[in-house]
Length: 329
Image 1 (tube, rainbow, N blue to C red):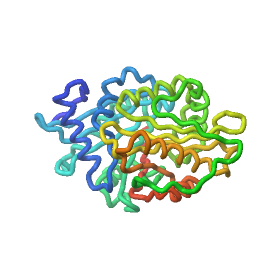
Image 2: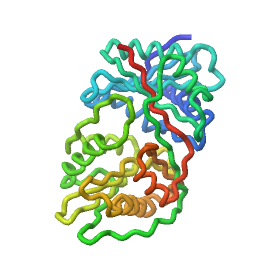
Image 3: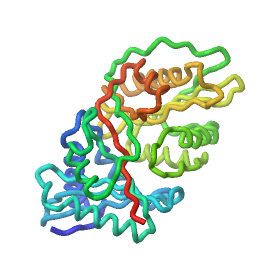
């Protein structure tokens, strides 16, 4: 067995690497949501064009068989001492030291880049204890601890949109694709505020400061990776954005939609604008992507307001996501 850094441009290597990653990531989960092959490999192939992230893949190989994978993300602007790591081993290759070898190699690479805070996500069905899952036992054994939890919720389509009214003085604007230039700065400001406001537990990460050009570039990268981008803004009485909600439709698997951010400025909360934004976006999704069947979202267990909104739409919990961390220095 040997560890090889992935060459995402080599299809003979990239295909088996992705297949091993997906098999490991989906094993034992309920309705697993795994990044599609086109999107993930595109993010690696065009890594040099992303000034915010250095993304690297590694695999353990036995001749032409990939036994396990690691994906290492090294932020380039925010959190310069942090790295995010995702190790996956298909069930039939577990217990052979594959995951441990990938973890040690990835930690060595991260350490050479001055990274001392390693984070990663662990997805567990329902409310299962961490130590009852293969991934949980593996991470705990190597010193990781759970620093934050979120529920992954799923909504089956078509869904009944809860009754809601757009309050007097407010209106909505929505689009499919990259945000129009006129909204970029406001959109970036709200994303920055959401990063500061959303619960993140004890991860110890600093929320990034977004700018209009960065938002445009990030959304364009997602579009280039095959995602359909669905966004709704709520405009306040002064005509400026006060809330937003956005979804990503994976090109590899458009039946499963990612509900990403939903956020309302503090000064405008209490008017049902989160529901207004999500409803407007769900309407767009149904109109432009009729092939969708499920919407997936993640909500912190302490985020009571968003949990209430999601329940009104009919989302149900299927997994618990533990944000794991390891401090190496």
